[in-house]
Image 1: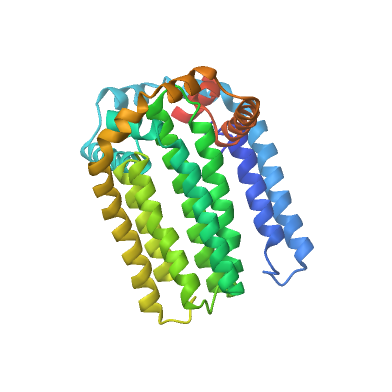
Image 2 (image 1 turned 90 degrees about the vertical axis):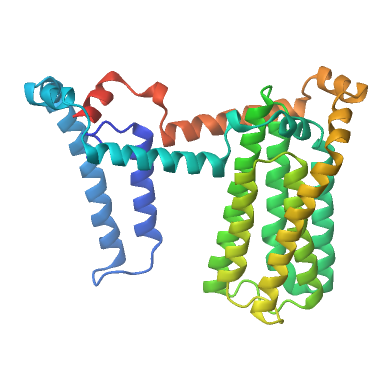
Length: 341
């Protein structure tokens, strides 16, 4: 089907690899030997891919001819029906909601761009302070090591993401891209926290001091997101994902679960309120600092070798992702014809 409908090679490759990995990594799931079951599934996938390629070559002309049939041309001229219009309206609302949650360059205000330009030092300080608090919690209770394994990579990811976004000429695009990197890292961390706690007892029996340190780190996140100019949808998604993770995870501290969740929720909401108030109070100071001679000289100096190397690595990663996830520019006319029919 993927061949006949014109899907790109990267999509088909990712589909085959993900299915093969699922069958190979899963414990025994049938009465036949595991190797035989995996071989059967692999044979089905690879023979299906081969059959799809051969069918496309054999019947490509027939599909192109069918595209111009009188019945399809008449259906196209009649216009969309009520169901199609309703689906289009629902899809439009869904796209607007996704644009709000994931950020949109067109919706980035001048104030948010100003705050993003002048808060690079704040971002480094935020990452360093967060890791110091994590170290204090780990020294206070060695059981915090499981959380540290998730928290430290999170700070490294957002630091690398901020370094890359700082060099993007269009600040509105940089703001949105950094917000998406942040949310992606947050979703990976929160989902892994819930899954590992549910099935592996990854984090449990934390004492009071590590929980307080963790709540402090959590409360600083919305403060930072406000100060650095992140859009409301990004901040909302961050709060909701963290609250869901703490609420859905099994008991992970010695205090009652309801109290621990309430503490984390209080930290998140108070951090969001504090961030909004700080932005209102110090917005003018951030705009003034933007025009300082030191920052202008730093901007004119251009990227250093480390930044260029990171940009090259990021470009290669983006090309690989574009191949696997597909790219409109790489869609051929034949694939578009097959998709239409």
